[in-house]
Length: 345
Image 1 (cartoon, rainbow, N blue to C red):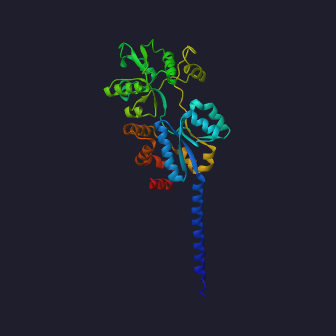
Image 2: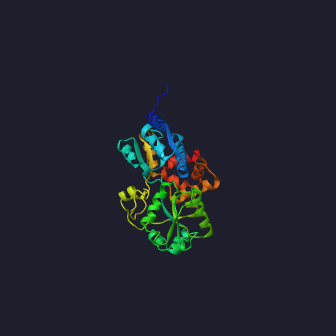
Image 3: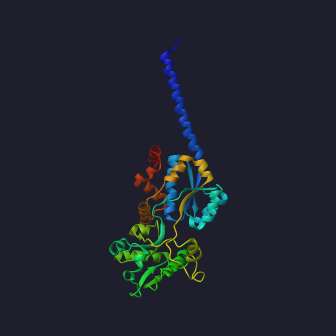
């Protein structure tokens, strides 16, 4: 019988050890992917959140071996279900101001985790002007704006400036009414315009910008129309007026508070939040991804323009994003995971 030489024995033992290491690595990777299991995701009913949910689905499935199920969602019902039932596991774009108290309680008790406090840069709401208005006339703050009603002539009274607020019934209508009063805009030559509807608000921006006219009013970002026309958010130029002023007066009807004080717009708190189940089952690498996943505002707005122009739903837009913006998403994951994702799409 042939006996192994000492050298052959060493080589054989080394080969066995190497195979064992490779097998263990493959087992560990398979186990990690299997551990991720099934994740439920809130597919919110607005474009940016739906896009984010579908992008996360691609990255978590192709890169981390998760199985992602998208569920119809909105801020209040999705958060309530996460808090009370533990599903969905993820809300990618939760506008938290409206649920802040119960969210803090859920975080404190470990049911929900805020994994990303700023998933989109430049996100928020307030008063916007076209870029050429800001550049040509130096209108950079609300303080600058108040001095120049002549630049924004009211369609029915050219001697007055037109400020376009929110349609009746929107929560922001009350806020704009109260801020209009707090900044004494009527006495400074302004009139508040009700656009009548969301379409009316969008139409007023489109009509003005396409004609090269000045426009000022309320809107929010990320949105397709802000991206399409590159609208610029004005700094209010004043300090925060206090929580009581905002929550007990500015957001209330005039009959409930007739003396609002000047203030900047409240900060928009928009988070990506996950359940404790996601934190435990998806694993630390998926959690790191969620923390690093930050969309540049201009990229998000450009994708919303794409969705509008092409009538694209979240799934199709997500694939367009993955192909067009690899330099953005590849920074959110390791190079090895990025290669797996790229190979899988």
